[in-house]
Length: 528
Image 1 (tube, rainbow, N blue to C red):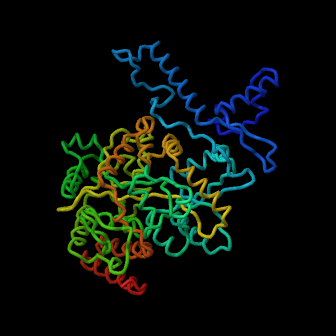
Image 2: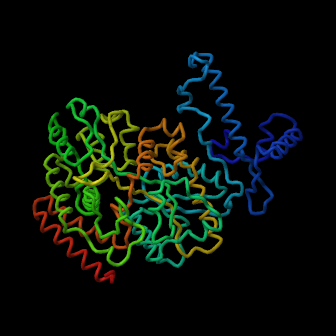
Image 3: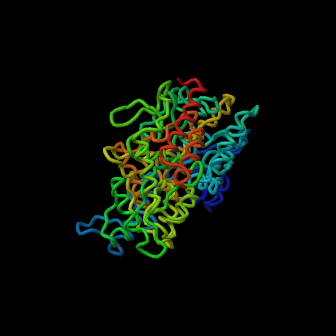
């Protein structure tokens, strides 16, 4: 178990030597443990003549049961029991222990192959940093060589597109941002998983609906969620309490809170916004438009929401120069008066850094980035933040955009390589693996079972809050529809809206310019 938890291979001979009994006795006992289903012997060479030993799920469960008994003994000894003699919750070894916890990941029964290397292209984000740091553990768990390549977001997209033009893919798996799914699937960059999932009888019902469906395009599944993230409003609870304010649920309340808190302390802004030129401010505008109840393009309505999974013809028509968009733009202009002075140059990293340093009372932020202050006890925001859904505009309902990454398979892989890629993809998105990422600092989970795990819930209240938002239907992909022209929308909006916030253009002119430019692109692509 120690070797398994350390991510180190254990040979049969090493196990026998460690037993400190006659070699023959040890080998007989190892054979018995294998027969009892406690140990699994897996070939570790192509010849099949040498093997490694791994604990099975049964042994891991029994080991964790032993740990619980040990906890109970300690608890009874030191009085950590309830009045009726039951064992109460207390910290032991760093996390809450409970019988409902997901087990530590067990090794694949049949490894991918020690002679193979699985290369995974990914962003520089918490989950993938964790994968890089524990690659030796992954090698042991998957029975192969795992190589993680981390790139910044823009470089990641460029490398995915460049890889598609190569005679053979340099990667076996790729992490793709949800809004890219439409472009990558339409241009044949990533492989549909429908046939593989059908053949494997794969059941995705444990995934959050928004994250799972957000990894599809026109009724085909192209990825499995591994690091979803939700944009929320982060509010400094201590500053709100001091001012006698409650966290805003509407855009009017948000404006009032920003006005009251702005400069209420030295060097404190009401809010820090992602108004940086280009991609940052473009995302801000699209997500704010959704707060006012309207998508950026003419999506078909489904009840109170919109269909972002089947998009065709008139659905591509932009809705930028509308009365609702005008209201959203004017809201952003008014909010800029109470925003941090660096907002016009902020991207996601800079925005969360300023908030973590205590220079703003509020910020919109992706849940994955809350670790900057949730796990940093030196931050003024540590332990002093309430996470709430996006405040809604007049007459609109509460919606928070979901984004983040799913694992996808490059198109055109040979069958044997495709089989290995699927095996690793399925393994890396299992509930116990997702829990492992959380316990290594990744504050997100795309599975209900992972979010319900007591150890996961003990790591941060944010995960259970996001889980509840999913159950209420507040997490949606339509604020950022995954169309092939998504990068074109970002480029146009990122320029026009930034000029508007600088005061170089009126809201009317900025929206009119953006509408006409996007409309020209959609017509040129033959959508309508």
